[in-house]
Length: 436
Image (cartoon, rainbow, N blue to C red):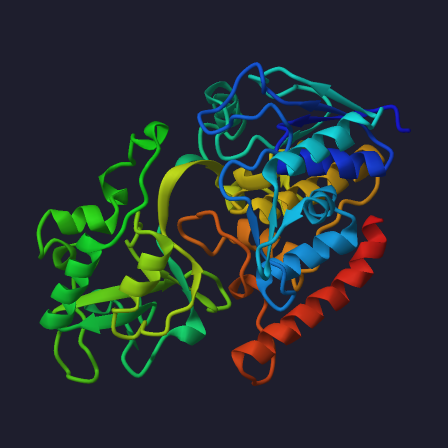
């Protein structure tokens, strides 16, 4: 056992996984968790690894991105995925768990490790010495959030998602959509989906009537005017969107040679051009309604959503600007971030960041080289997302194949995803030996 201790703030999925991985590598851990002395607005259980929202961890099919991420975590010896497998409940092709059993088993596993000291108290400042992992999740306490702000020079911390949907490039119908910028400024930087008058008013009606997600009491303070959901804008008048995010000025539809009545613009989300952001479309529409309504947009009839739009409370850092691909703070490498606060979405995504932070923090204490997973793996694709300096407005995202480096050669979507999964697991095998 090495004589230096790792300090971890936060006992959720990421913090619990980080503690487990560090101890596996011979590092003693002090894990701080403020529950039960203080609960966030969404937490109810004193147990570690509490699942606040759904009890579903999504698909297990290794030829889906969520399934591939699970398989990588299994092969790497993740505590969280092992516990999920042991506490599963029937859910078809998805992995779902009995949340009480799941959290209790995680708590018992960590409590049984003599090398882990669990301290039940709120941390309100960043320790000034030692290696530290901050894994406080999307509902980081106000005091600690302020400490993070100070740590990042009063920048790079958000408290709300104001997310527009993202679609895959190969699901856009370019027989209708065309490239170009308003007034010709910026070249062909945007993809434009044109609407005539009838199509526009049908779309506005669907937006206004669509089912919305109800906000919780502590989420009522909405962001500034520029982040208003499209359905709120639509309620101000039928023409509001056409004079806002859907204004067509300076654009000509090459099919007609005329300016459309309205235009939905999409912007590159990554350098590879595999993902496109629907500009200005942050929304509270439910996920099924987003898919139904946004597929009314000409050119997006068969859109595949890599990320749905949302608007909710979520504390996360501007990771591309302040984190290295090892999850270390650029300005202070002794500090690691893990979990949703890094800018990933989802239970398994948070677990993956906890795994990496725990491994690299342990290696740092031991004086070993700090490593990052291959970009071709699901874990590496997530690191690529949170260090993507190409993104203009960084926002959290779940794992999806649009985050992976593209494959060479042709093939259908199913074939490409199968090959991506095979490539990921093949490249993971070599890296796994380095992190053992």
